[in-house]
Image 1: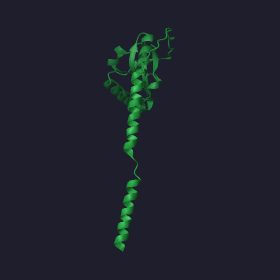
Image 2 (image 1 turned 45 degrees about the vertical axis):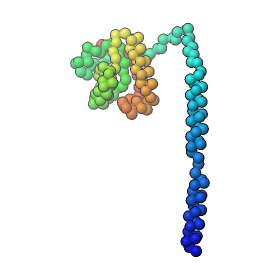
Image 3 (image 1 turned 60 degrees about the vertical axis):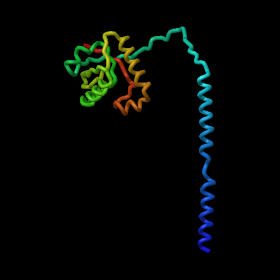
Image 4 (image 1 turned 90 degrees about the vertical axis):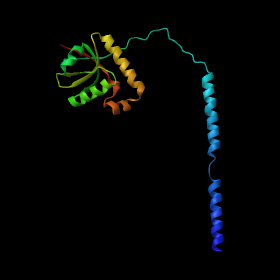
Length: 170
């Protein structure tokens, strides 16, 4: 009798176990069909580009004026009147570390120190304010398209949404 009850219980569990499973293959087929239809609709729609004839007004860039000196003599020739600053750090080792990481990405980085002892990490330096502003926008757009500022903060330790222009005072 015990064997009969055990066999009956086992058969019941097997029936219940197989009947409750969702039919994933049916869901997958519907999902794939909908995805394929969406891709076909996207491919069949012509893309139109609308160009505005009115030029955008120039972006006003804030400029901070400071007296700075290059940290290394090799950087002296590259430090001009207007510089794009990506970070201001109080610890020289941190500034050097950021400089090394940015140089690995192809930037020519200059370290400068102001009168208060802050290290300015500079990624570009020009004699013309407009060139510096254009480079600031280029760098901002380059790093903002990679990902959000959280990624940049984790990778470099600084957010790239606060790039600024330094006007060197002599």
